[in-house]
Length: 355
Image (tube, rainbow, N blue to C red; front, side):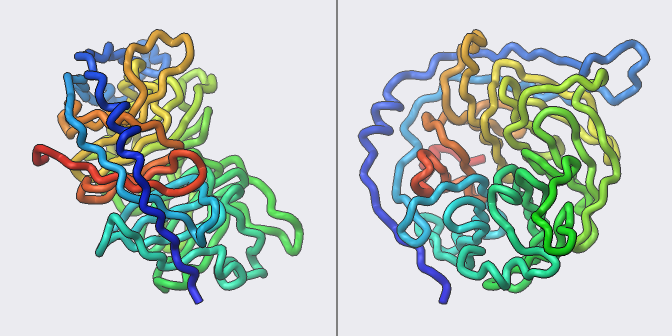
């Protein structure tokens, strides 16, 4: 029998109110446009224009409503992704799971958890020994009916077509016989992002060195292209996540937010927003959510928290929380966050405007 989620209604509104009393100063981001060490012979498409402006935003729009634990135990969500009324998560102690938020986004119901069906989830042979640390700690993308999840060893492909009984159908690298799982650096990612218009193209972002353009066909992933973050091949630091928003790809780096356009399947030069130190990122059809945490001694004047932007690049809200990971419902009504490694906390976003 599928385990039930345990809900604990919490009352930490006062803490949020304290955080939100300070008026957010009017700020303007200094945009630094770099061409990845581009020389005069570089023929790549120029970076996209994304005139982000940060405005004065007040209002207590974030309200804590509940927290959720898997099986009433410590729940540390590594990655979270919302799609079509479902919240997909990786972490402890659930492994890989899906929560239904379509009917009651403030009160999810568990559809499945890999923890409860380990043998059927990852049959051995040919797979087995699936852990979220190895295959789900770095990145999650849903390209229904498949989920692509990446961790410290590589990428796992999960067939979601059986709603209550998902099955791992491919893994990169594949295990050899009964040996311990190996690693493949070409499939170890910290972020995934779909191509804005081509469903079979997915970008995988390694932590410091390369962007992989992946061709997805059924359960199969193949590497179509490999591009260094910098023209010189120097490493950068450090990818924390990625998302597709509108017709652009956004990459959260430890010390910047990168904005890339697409030309065919090729990515353009980045627009680099060096004042935003992006620790986590997600998006819906209408809004982009970026968690900024200033790097020590960086000189950034932005307050730590989640900055919310519309498609024109204008800030529409500031959410004064500092999550380990987070995502947002498709209607922008609820935010799901791992705040402390103990539970998934649910916040309602009470908008005073329409987008």
